[in-house]
Amino acid sequence: MTTPPHAALNNTLWLIRRELWENRSIWLMPLILGGLLLLAALFGRVDIEVPAHAGSGVGVSLLFGFGITFFLVMSIYSTWYLLDCLYTDRKDRSVLFWKSLPVSDTETVLSKLATALLVIPVVYFVVADLTSLLIAFIISVRASSLLGGSLWRMDLWLQLQALWLYLIVTLAIWYLPVAGWLMLVSAWARRAVMLWSILPPLALYLAERWFLGTDVLGTQIAGRLFGYIAVAFHARADGLAHLDGPAVAASAWDLMNPAAFLSNAATWAGAAVGFALIYGVIQVRYRRTDAG
Image (cartoon, rainbow, N blue to C red; front, side, top):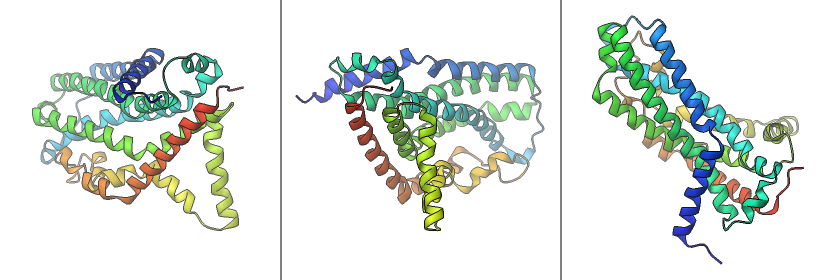
């Protein structure tokens, strides 16, 4: 019997709420990080020397820098969540309870995928946004008028919202194959999920190097893990690290490069691999109920 689309959507939304309820660290970790950054802004040194020619680019760079901090923590947590989300259900046998409910394995897998690629980034970036707003207020009071003025601008905040939205959408597409692989390991491995996520790609990479003398797999993996910035952003994104020269981006629009991202063959090839891996996750989830 096929589940009606509206019922499937309701089930998926309910399952996402379940993930937020069972994994409170999804929202606790960004709140703790935001609190630490606020303490640093309140009691740390914030009177940074700002060159007059930098203009609003300094504000973009600093606020984006706050977001990068959240992004790094989010990346680590999301990796752990993807490896743990299906394995834990089998380890504690709660998978048997969830399979007794009128919820399909497809809905379960997709809800966890949506949590990792959409819900967690949204939670982190909302907290990052609120934290940046409070930090901007603190800096505008404590630091030089030039630095404070460069942060406290409506157009800057609109740019920041566009940047967050762009990051959430493009990250979900680009890292779909990575998420699919991690979830496949989580659904299949009996133990040591972290090792299983690393050892098969590493073994294939070494076998290719030893027996064929090529590096195709290694190049593809490295490009997927570390090539996002080069594909999704203009080269001037490097200017975020240089606040003392003309390389500083004048606005968030100078950083984003959606045309290149959407027209890049690697974007959609990776998405196709990701969909195939997610299909495999659903099949494994259907057949596996134990982790021992």
